[in-house]
Amino acid sequence: MSLGRILVVDDDPQIRRVMRTTLAGEGYEVEDARSGEEALEKIRVSRHDLMLLDINMPGMGGLETCRQVRATSDMSIIMLTVRNTEQDKVQSLDAGADDFITKPFGTPELLARIRAALRRAPSSPEAGPQHITLDKVEIDFQSRKLIVEGREVRLTPKEFDLLRYLTLHPNRAIPHRELLQAVWGPDYGDEVEYLRVFVKQLRRKIEPKPDKPRYIVTEPWVGYRFHLPEAPL
Image (cartoon, rainbow, N blue to C red; front, side, top):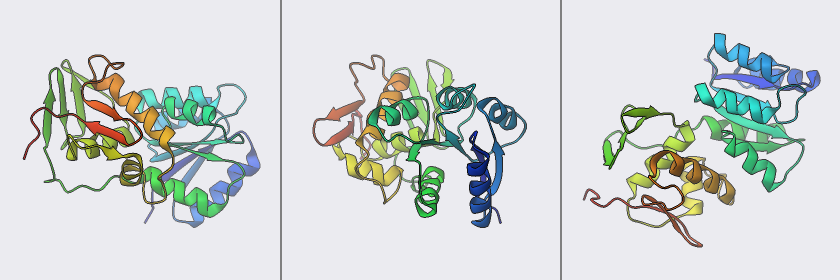
């Protein structure tokens, strides 16, 4: 039984070959592409659960490829880069990636990142409210849909899981580490920049004035709080 379909996008044939062999040996179905353009063509004709995407490629770079993929797909995306700077991380996450890994990396780290990206934050269907209305925003947790002013707005899986966790604990300051471990998994906890980017993205989508948030409120030095005026008991 396949653990999921992965598309490896890298212009280095040796890296593609090694990752294809490694991931297939772990139980994943693997396709590869040598450019952003080829990757976009492949996702048009077949479904994938996750993309491993090199940030530095000739032609269409990894960031632009990520943006174009994210415009039409909610597949998980992990960016690959040789540089480990906060700017690279923020640019990758802001383009729509779920995670970030620096070359060279070992197989255990790669597999852990893939599991985290494919992970869905656990919550029982009965837990918490199934539908929340915030002025002109409707969040339907059963169908995983966000409706803003009557129009459906796309959320990535990680954005949705983060929003779900915040709304399950309304009006409480939730520490950064708790949010990271709830949404990404137990191996996370220090990647505060991930939360900054994802909260910024969520605010753009649900807040009337993203620069003056009413719902996803920053708790300085602690984390974030979801302000729900009429929180269910």
